[in-house]
Image 1: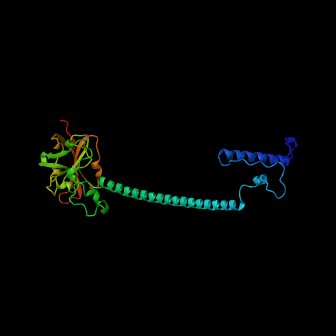
Image 2: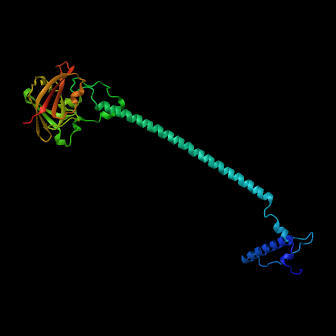
Image 3: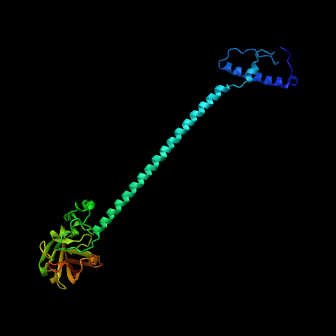
Length: 300
C-alpha cells in the first residue's frame, strides 16, 4: 500500500471512495457483531483498481435492486391493491344498497302501521262517540261494524264492564227504583242492545250514583220487560232512587221531561250538578223519538 496521505492531499474522487470504504467497514463491523461475518477482509487500496479488475466499492455503489424484478413486484403490488380497492368498493356498494332497502322497508312498515292505527282510532272514535241515543227498540243493523273491527267488539261483555268514571266497583249503580210507576230493576254496565236485554243500562263513562255529573241510564218501553213503559207518566218532584253496589241509596227528584230526536246526543253531556238522565223510546210501539227525563239529586 502507498504512504498514508492527509485529507488535504486527496482528490474529490478519492474522498468519495474513502467515505465508501468507511461505510463498508462499518457494515462489516455490524455483520461481525451479529455473527454473520467472522473475518473482516482486507480493505482495498484507496487508489482506483486497475482496469478489468474487481472493484468492490464500485459494486457497493450500484443500486440495491434489480429493475426488472422490482418493476414486476411493483406491478404485482399494484394489481393486488387495485383488486382490494375493487373489493372494498363492491362491499361498500352492497352495504349502501342494503341500507337503502332497509330504510325503504322501515318507511313502508311505518306507513302501514300509521294507516292501521288511524283506522283503529277512527273505529274506536266511531264506537265511543254515539251518534244516536240509547234505548232503541230495533237491534243494530247487521254489518254496522266493518268485519276487520269485529274482533274489537266481540270479546266485550256488558256484565264485565265498569263505567270509566268509577273509582271503585262499589260505586257502580246496580238497582233503579221509581215508586210512582212501579219500576224496580237491575242496572247493568253499558247501554247497547245486549245490555238492555238484561235491565236498565248505565251509559259507560257517565257519573255514578250521588256523584257530581250526569248519570245516564236507559231502558226499553215495549220490549225486554218494558221497564220504562210508563216513564212518560212521571211528574216534577217524583222520586227516583238509585242503589250502588255497596247498597247505598241516592235519591233524585224529577226536574224536567222532554221529547227529543234520537240524534240529539247532547242529553249525554256531563253536568256540574249531580243529576240522573233517564232515556227510552217514544211513542210507544212507534219509537221514532226519545223521551228524556232529568232528575236532580235531592238535598234532603
